[in-house]
Amino acid sequence: MALFREQRLKIYNSLSGKKEYFVPINEGRVGIYVCGPTVYNKVHLGNLRTFMSFDIVTRYLRHLGLNVRYVRNITDVGHLEHDADSGEDRISKKARLESLEPMQIVQRYTVDFHQMLNRLNCLPPDIEPSATGHIIEQIETVKDILSKGMAYVVNGSVYFDVFKYSDSHHYGILSGRNLEDLIHNSRSLDGQQDKKNPQDFALWKKAEPEHIMRWPSPWGDGFPGWHLECTTMSTKYLGAQFDIHGGGMDLKFPHHECEIAQSEACGNQQPVNYWMHANMLTLNGQKMAKSTGNNILPEEVFSGSNTFLSKAYNPSVVRFFMLQAHYRSVLDFSDAALAASEKGFVKLMASLSVLNQLPVSKITTSFNLNNWTNAGYDAMNDDFNTPVLIAELFTAVKFINQVKDGDAQISAEDKKALEIQLNHFIFDILGLESQASDSKTDRIDMVVKILMDLRNQARVDKDFALSDKIRDQLIEAGIQLNDGKDGTGFSFL
Ligand SMILES: [Zn+2]
Image (cartoon, rainbow, N blue to C red; front, side, top):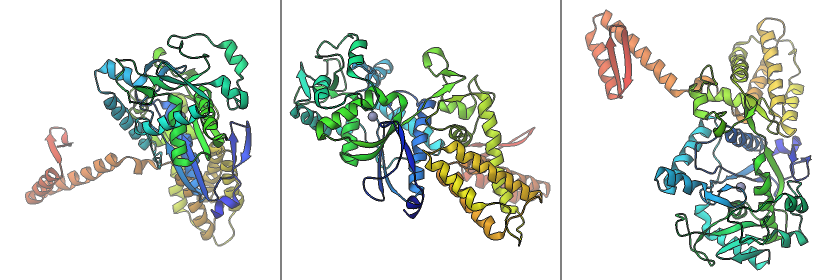
């Protein structure tokens, strides 16, 4: 908390279009809600960038000493194929195509999502609510909006009345769109005939007889509209007004605009003080899309099994690469850019061990550690500017190498201080991991190789009791040694 008072953090607020000093509603505490994935397919690399951006936000707020409650939802019902309330539910459709239960689809892709974020060292949220787990609360929100006269019931569905709302509120406040333009640009879509106006959006949709995901409600069997869950769950876990709401840029309209309208209709107040939006990731200069083949899965990046890549990249290198761009800028993903990041990452990590070995001097340090530390914090205080912080890290790397080459000196006290601060920046705030600690299997490989060498030596020494003991105890540990003509290998039992 002391650090938070010292550092004056500014956040770019999408609502005002300006960077604003961050002042939490409750001193010392921060409530943050981030729109999570719709779990109907493997997580997209671009989505991972968004979630990693908010991992940086929560890590930095915590580093400053704030008590953060981080809520990120799982959308497991209600997100239709088209944003304008039309088409099939994405999860139902996938379940139908694969002849599975919708909840099997949800489980499968929630696990994939967690695994990929874990590999990128993103910390889990404090609360991860799902839409299907909050049907009762969502029905209560719909009732509330109906009681305020901002919604209407038609044929078993409930729609938000955007025109009625606009009489007293500003619909379009976040996205900058105005209702006139929306009317001008709207076209009639199938399944929209129940709405008074095409701009209205579903709070509750009637389930047709063939629809699997359905719940009873005062308006008949149905399911919640996509925008409703985030309003209901953010209010439940963070209150009617909270500090930060984040998501991808593509969610600004209609999703976040509709969230604001729903909350204001219920409570007549702006629900969120700071809206943050992360920009997209392109692949070789073009939008990533499955339909065009310009697409790459996170696991393919980690294994190198995609024709766009010349090799596999460690998840920490991928994280480092993404942090070299500001979260509000478009970032282009390419093999060449990743390879360049890998070089930088290796250099940065190597400098930590060089620093550890540096000789210390009795005379003063030829580096202004204070100024450098401040510059690092200034970068983060400027709307989480990770590329500038990384540039500062390389200023320190340069100095470390100068000391190593005898062109500069560092005192024992400053060496310790630099070590601590680099650890704060690199590991706590940027969430990078040194490659050695990332791969536990690599370390197991090394240990087994050491034991194989000892066994070979025992055989050379004709100490067969020892060589057999090593072999048998490895089998007990689930590792089988395989002696072949090219030497000994091993496999897991
Ligand atoms: Zn949302």
